[in-house]
Amino acid sequence: MGSNQPATGRPRRIVVGIDGSPPSKAALRWAVGQAVLTGATVHAVAAWEYPSLYGWFAPMVDDGFEQTARRTLTAEVDEVVGRERPVEVRESLVLGHAAEVLLEAAEDADLLVLGSRGRGTFARTLLGSVSTRCAVHGVCPVVIVRADGTASAPPRPADTSEDTVRTKDWQLSLHVVEDGDTTRVHAVLDADGDVLHSDALARRNPRDTPAAAVGDEFAVGRALVDLGHQLLRAGVHSATGPTEE
Image (tube, rainbow, N blue to C red; front, top):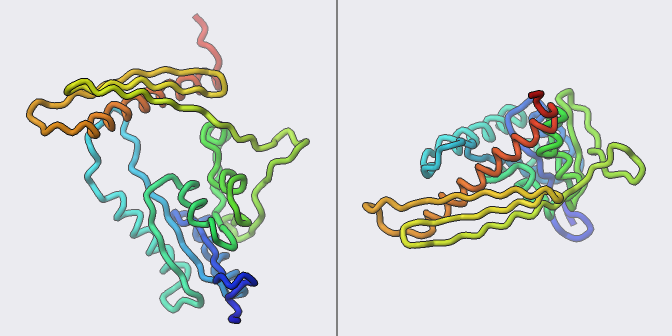
């Protein structure tokens, strides 16, 4: 059995998140060093998403975002690892949220390596960091590498700590009604007992060919954007307190 084969006979694989930042490069460098020691393959994974454009609901057809992400991925691997690679390095570019993409990529991996990306308290509260989500929901060990190259395990939930990481399940329901050339959506978000509602619609241009799914996407997208605005207003209100009359 070769040195890169664990006891199960499955090839060793280290997944590392790539985003072009200094911590990401440090994470890739650390992952390659670990792969050299263990005989593993490095799987460099980059996630990309279309930017949120509030108030704009036309289909996104420009593929420039994907091309930029792909160039970032390839450039980072070439810069850190070099052309003459000491280990096998695979590259994957996936459309989706970074935490979800990395968790899926690391399902059968031996290790998930991430760069440390600091966030402010407000952003951590609303979104949670990628490293924390991966640490809580990942099925393999997770290593966080800082820009200076030092590594550590991410904080895990503790029973007695005041800084315990909590996970919450918010329930979102969407009621979609297609009525001729009009699609209506009623969205309900239950955020730990705080319920938000949103209504939206989409109308087909009479000159367009009927396509119910397109109307669904526009109407649902508008409802979700409105819910997003409500959440942001609620977050700002909670952070700053009520405005004095």
